Length: 392
Image 1 (tube, rainbow, N blue to C red):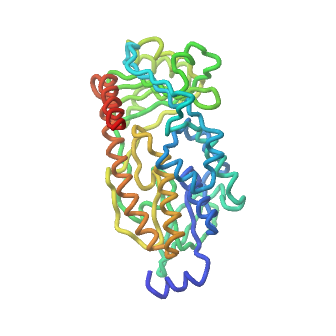
Image 2 (image 1 turned 90 degrees about the vertical axis):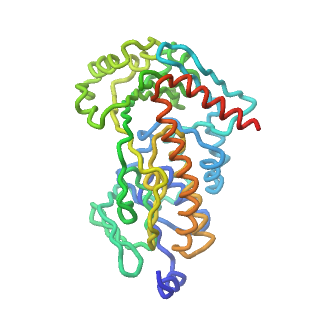
Image 3 (image 1 turned 90 degrees about the horizontal axis):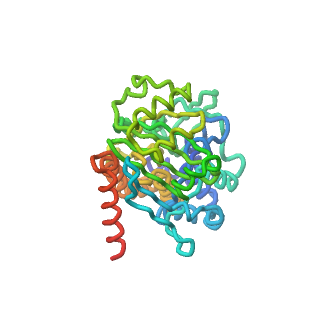
């Protein structure tokens, strides 16, 4: 912005629009609200659907928890968080156990679990009711000569804003304003399933209170106990991008689909195959995408990105939601400190590039390891190195 534009912003309330009502967008809006800065969140879904967009999240001390402190929700989060959710069990495909970590009740760790829906409900309840506007699907963001952006929505609304923040995920409508980079297929496809642990006590006992990884043959069966008593399951395979269409599995015919999926894990131990056998009648196939590790862009006036819109990566660093919330905190605090939007963008983006590129590389390295030969043994060795470094 030129000096006259900056001066005019100082004379009026800057209009901030956040595109996307996930954990990152909601956290950004709430920290701004806590500091007396209004913002509007435009969410494409007609109602909050965060509960259906993922299972349990481990919220890290130096990122997600830090953001919750800035948002004034840390104590409420602690009351809801499951520290026992840090349990971790690791097997190879034969059912041989490699790791069996149990979180000590009297020694809570730094990565307690909370369901995504519960976290977002906590954020939504703390926001002014008029902040989040559901049913607003962004079609286009058009830069204006004065540094503002005109947001055009499918429902006909047009809003002109001083700052447009893309918190709209993997296929962001805001990202093309800043970079031509597009998400690329990571080589990994997952089928998400869900098991009622209460109805299957054998699986509940096998899974324990947190996460279970079964690894082998460049495949994985991943289980994660949620707060609602269900285990989210991710049957994961390294396959070609079009495999979900060409594999012959009719995902809309659950009983048949589970049998066909089990065939891909035919020689796996029954305790692992039960995660597919016992699953409910909804199978959600999805490809895992990623942006280039270390992505940067040429800074532009009045627009920036947070979360997956900025640094989409595979889930194998456990950082996705945590980074989105940390991005939200860093951007909000930069706006509070500097007042000037462009200065805030500059400060935030330089910080974000540094920490997100490290996590993106870690995520990519872990994906390669988890779907490599001897994956269970190699992942155990990685954890042992991490614990040894942490002890020093």
